[in-house]
Picture 1 (cartoon, rainbow, N blue to C red):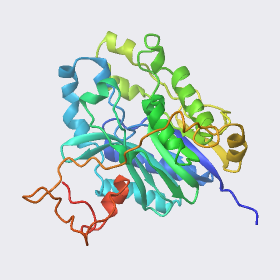
Picture 2 (picture 1 turned 60 degrees about the vertical axis):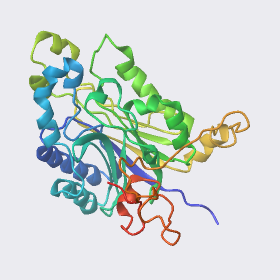
Picture 3 (picture 1 turned 30 degrees about the vertical axis):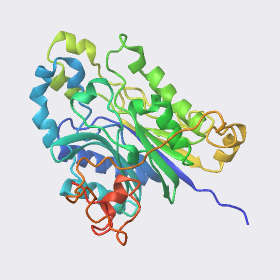
Picture 4 (picture 1 turned 180 degrees about the vertical axis):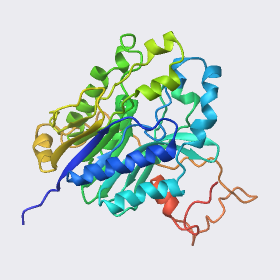
Length: 354
């Protein structure tokens, strides 16, 4: 019997959100979801922290100056289980399209750089967080844990996601490759910060990171990338120095094949829109034949990776004698291996934590 590999159209967003306005940005996201579905896409991916926009204020001045945006950023970050989140899931279901949303996740008092993978039925496939925020992002966002390095079985193949400079973390990438990832979402902010002053933040290096991920992992890479709009500049760039540090545009959405080739004509960096590519997962076997760093090309006798996917619980309830509550012989169950599974697990079987 011949194996049938999934074939489908994928879409990567290159657009600006309605900065610091969650509801308006969700309106725009739903319109983009509908547009992609109308064009025959079965998967659409959004840039890093597209809801409610990437917090460029942390890069433009002192922490004291940036504090003027903090409460508004918190108030417009996405909380799972809210009517706003339900609208996104409903849009995925209504248009029968997988959605990978990049957003600032608010959980209790903390924020996380997050990606939410929603199936075409509107059900959650995965909720993940960026393992280590980059540089000054650490002043605003918390960290993920080992459960955030996951690849998931879907009708479109084995799907995984990382954010921005997680793509320059060799061990994190290898952990993903080793899970037989076939479709990877690489979510990026705009590449218009410190233009001419920090080459590593520009499109040349970061698009190369997405392209090399495709070649190393022998997978398709869908790399959405946001645009900095004139409206964002008006809010953020309040003096001449800031106007030099952050420029309009910076949109470089890309989709790469497992051999590294670009699969579409790119949009100009200031243009908002969607790029598309038709994916045939059968191509992966051709790339794997040449090299498979997590398979036949590996040398586990020389180098190996240890991956601890235990969820990073902040507080674990224990008895007076130190045993975890509910951890009796008849109640012991394996720890969940992803945040989505932890949230979905019944209270009787999940590790009791707050």
